[in-house]
Structure formats: structure tokens, C-alpha cells
Length: 176
Image (cartoon, rainbow, N blue to C red; front, side, top):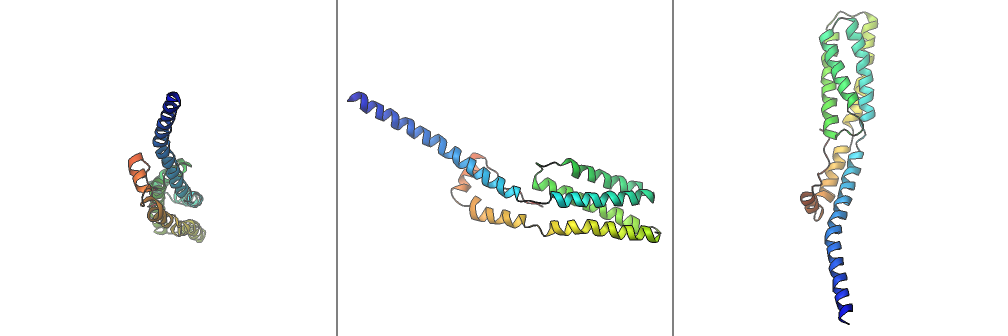
């Protein structure tokens, strides 16, 4: 009888330890999966790729006009965008896109300030439209709203807020 009682106490102790260890671990993994799901909802890579392609065409036009400083700057930002890869954070994607857009506008303005042939002027308009389309789509992206909903609906509420802060689950990054 004593042995059975000791076995039950041992089993209860093992069960209590298992619950204390694995419940927080499971909660952490569950919250991390939810954060990752929100971050996978950011779908701007294709738009950035389309913007890089339009920028590539503008670089060709700028090079033909001898605008080396502006074309080299835009080339650098295009390369940075292409090197980001699939696991880039939303913050890194947003910064790369801002840099690309700024360099694109600098080169576009420099080209527009040149005396252009009719063909070059048409190309400039075409490349500008090809760039602004994907940029407008990025502006309509609802990712930041999804992050807000997740933060107020899940991450900032108990117990997720406690799990996140105690167990090191960072909230999803904003695209900004």
C-alpha cells in the first residue's frame, strides 16, 4: 500500500513538473506561430520586384543620357532590394522600398530635366508608370492593419501579453 501511495505521489510530481514545463513552451510556440502567420501576410515582394524591373529600365535610359551618379545610386538600391531574400523582415522591406523609390525619383527628375527626344520622353513616362503602379499597390497593402488587429485582438491581451514578454516572443513588425 505504501509503495502504491509513493508511486502516485511520484507520478503526480512528474505530471506537475511536465505541466509546468510544457504548458509555457506550448503557449510560446503557439504564439510564435501566430506572429509568423501575420508576418507571412505581407505580400509586397512581387510589387518590389516589379518596381526593380521598372527601375532597371530607367537606369538604362539614364545611362544613355550620361547621368552616372543617379544611375549608380539607383543601381545600388536595386541590388539591395534583390539581395533581401525571402526571409527579410517587414521593416527591412519597407526601408529598401523607400530607398528604391527615393533613388528612382532622383533619377526620374534628373532625366526629366534633360532635353529629351520624343522617344526618350515616352520611355520616361512608360517607366514612371511601370514604377508607380506597384508602388500604389504597396500603399494599398493591408498588412499594417492586420498587425494592428492581431496586436489588439491577441498579442496585447492576457495571457499572450505575458507569454510574449516573459518568453521572448516579439510582436510582428510593421511595414514602415
